[in-house]
Length: 172
Image (cartoon, rainbow, N blue to C red; front, side, top):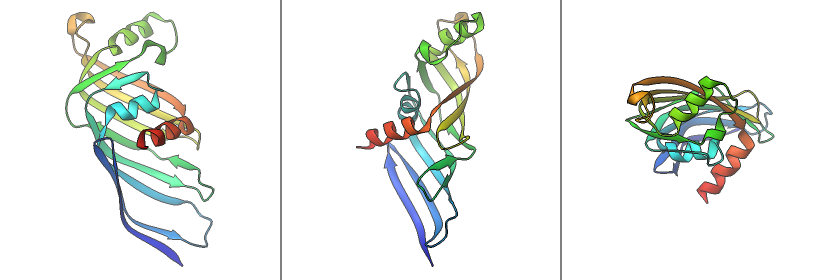
């Protein structure tokens, strides 16, 4: 016996998250794999939640996020990707990126007002508690390097439970 879900849709932060063709075995104890299709979700909402409100952004992202849901309610994000459809800005609080090296100071300065032309995010969790995000950015900060183009890869990691709790609070 199974419960078959033809399609599901959640409207969230000016965009939508959809999935389809899910079969949930009623009596099995195996995890359920679901692919979430993300369309035009606010980048500001995602980054604010992922950084405990220490990042703001303009623009929206779309892509896919494969999720494995365990029967105990825990979940793991498999390797997914999101990409911005058009240019925007990203402002990251300096305390999001720790360390005192000169290169890190320059990175912090660039990300305080980064104007991106290209933005993509690879996202996954190694377990049900830690989230890993690799941001790939191309753009500039008008105040850094005389506004010259910069290509960046920034790795952020954090607690998925905290992110999920904040996201659910945003939905209320």
